[in-house]
Amino acid sequence: MDRLSSVLNAFRPKTSSVDCLCLDDLSSGLFLSAEFSYWVYIVSGDVTLCSKENGDIRLYKGDGVWLATGQKLDVLITPDHQQQVSLLLCEYDFGTKALNPLLDLEWQWVLVSHDDVIAQQLAPLNTLLLGESLQPRCGSQAVVERLAEAYLVQLLRLFLQTQKIQLGLMAGLSDIRLAKAIVAIHEQPQQAWQVASLAEKAGMSRSVFSGAFKATMGMTPMAYLTSWRMRLAAQRIKNGDKNIAMLSDQLGYQSEAAFRRTFKKVIGVAPGGMNE
Image (cartoon, rainbow, N blue to C red; front, top):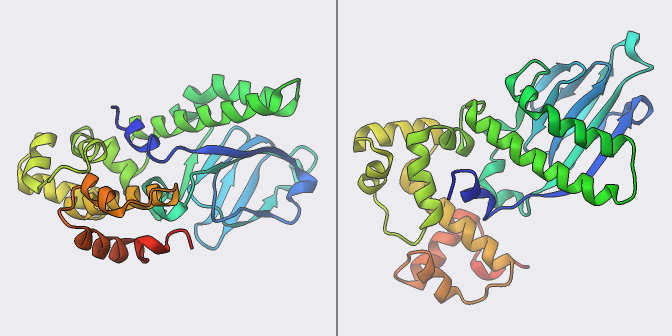
């Protein structure tokens, strides 16, 4: 399994909505739900987006910004462009945000300028998405939703290829050596992985691997293994898996009691409290 699919197979995004907004729609700012992720693309004009979390960012025609989690944005519009400001807003649902490592906050604001290689690679798909969004036709809603999902996967793929993200899971997956160990964890969470065996997967010495992993991922290899196991467990419980004993065994725990203790420590609630 490839490095991106190893995550998306467990936490698959869905398009919640795709909207084209004009100047009048932006007069009171953008209120983006913290439960969703967003791609904001400037179709025409230029704007400044202001947020308490990330400061101000100036966007011109053809620029876009990825928000791993929504927030309140004030929109400041250059007076010279008040008659031609419009943007495309794609909203994505990854399920329970706290369970998805793709949405960890270290990289919640990622700019893609119009002259960036990422924007150039996205151009053909962007043209299709804009065409269907701006001029709806028969069946456009279904087409737009699928195009937006394909757009997101391509965007994340290009983030990996260009090493756009500097910290967290996307940064780890951008490093070819670390990615081998991370994908091994994703594919076989039940294995009794140790730092030495993961370092071997990465083709690195134990000490070099440990240092690089923590510096890039923000946690130790063993902490990430535990986090991934518990996030998978929480996802499965939310989806109706009630057999905790079997689940703990499938995720590499020799006792249900140990699994339950770890689950509550990492997720913050007992397994039985996930659906309350």
